[in-house]
Amino acid sequence: MSSQGSSLIDAVNLTRELIRRPSVTPADAGAMDLVERTLAGLGFSCRRMRFGEVENLYARHGSARPNLCFAGHTDVVPVGDKAAWSKDAFSAEVVDGVLIGRGAVDMKSAIAAFAAAAARAIAAGQVRGSLSLLITGDEEGVALDGTKKVVEALIAEGEAVDHCVVGEPTSAEAFGDMIKVGRRGSINAEIEVAGVQGHVAYPHRAANPTPVLIRILSALQARRLDDGYPEFQPSNLEVTWIEVPNTATNVIPAVARARLNIRFNPSHTGAALAAWIEAEAQAACEGTRCSVTVTPQISGEAFLTEPGRFTEIVAGAVREVAGRAPELSTSGGTSDARFIRALCPVVELGLVGTTMHQVDERTPVADIERLQQVYERLIQRYFEGFAAK
Image 1: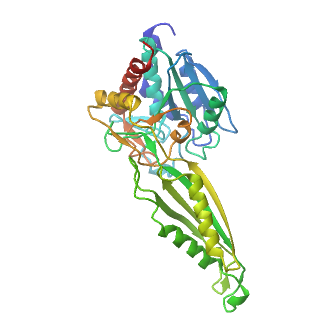
Image 2: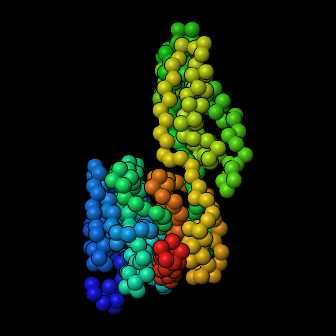
Image 3: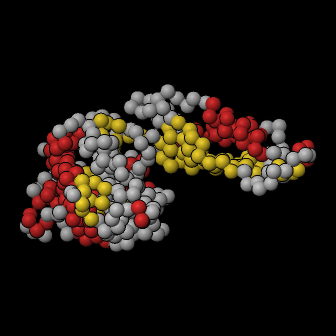
């Protein structure tokens, strides 16, 4: 598109169009096609990167450095109880200035806002380097064939990305009150204790796995993992599931299982925690006829983007538009930033997240417009601060 007027994007309308594509993980429903068409119309070189059944997109405008990347996801969580919604979850209706729909907050609005901001920056000649977008359709699911695979491919190819902003809904209560500069790591573990089934009246002929599982969980929960880490809250271990598949009251069961999750700060690594869980499990089995299998899955390591010029540029853009200084936080769950950290420094900045994953997920239209303004100012400040003079 040649003229500034023809290249501009209405972020609210684009958000609504994206919501109308019911891209519930792992479905795409045409959402990625819409993003690609939009960016191609702005002059981005678009590359679809499909892994397994997952649609991913890496788009870049320009070839020089620095390369400022925006990352996000088009997939959304299921609607849940359709009848509980005040409006159809994929109709993207605006009621009294509020956009209702699955993905309104998490996070189709951020994709639209950044695309609109990029259009203005390109038209104004502010991009003294490159803008890129890394968009996946596999963030809300298992996240194996999404951003993780794209980042691995970009690193292998030597693609230079200098900094990244992830559009997750980071604001806690009011727009712009928080950005995320790090995240705790996450490890899941399933523990299965195998014993010998038998009659409860003859325990010497059996090996009850249940007391062994209880000892394992008690030992794990007895340890205070840490007292926190600079910029991070203390690590915590939570038992999330226990199963003893036994329907009779007079039978010693053959197996007992449990699952747990640890959210950990940089005091630990996923591998070290996995080794600790394994050691405690094996110790609890000593002297018994039971055996134990621990299956860990490390979802991501803890990371922190240290305060500096990049975080100040992002926080400064928020201050200029929202009129408040955002808290630089590491709270909350995990996001695809855990993969992008291997590529470049990364922060997260988006809408208020109080209704994400809920019935009637919603955001004021004015907040989408303000998010676009923040991204516009961020892009401008970024190239003023990092581009070669």
